[in-house]
Length: 149
View 1 (cartoon, rainbow, N blue to C red):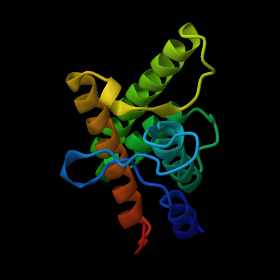
View 2 (tube, rainbow, N blue to C red; view 1 turned 90 degrees about the vertical axis):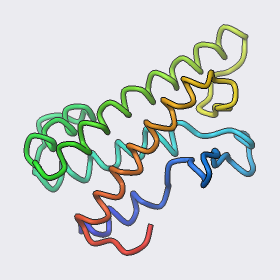
View 3 (cartoon, one colour; view 1 turned 120 degrees about the vertical axis):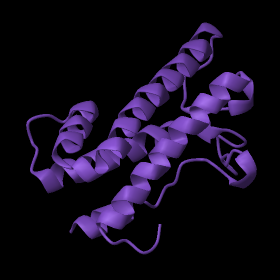
View 4 (cartoon, helix red, strand yellow; view 1 turned 90 degrees about the horizontal axis):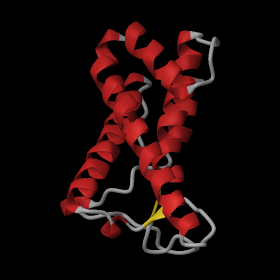
């Protein structure tokens, strides 16, 4: 069951392309931008759910709680999980700041960010956060022996 859940969770990848480029949406309302929810925060949420189920941790549905408990219980993944916690926090902040700027401009908020509108430092932090999400996905892939994804 965990292998199947992991396969489903790995269908989406962080929006990082080779050579430091962004893998932006190719069509639809987010064309040319990255979807911070679908290809960022949701990936962490899915991983946290899988780990919580495996650990039989049902005390909280909070992603941060789930990741902390997993880090305490799975010492071999502690470093990856601590990085994922920081990455998740950063991705939430970036997404909320983006939505706030949209609302201040009189636009409806969405999850689609053009990373080129960020400063170089912000882009670097966003890239590092998304790399941490990719590392979390890779750890799940190895843990549950998923070949593709």
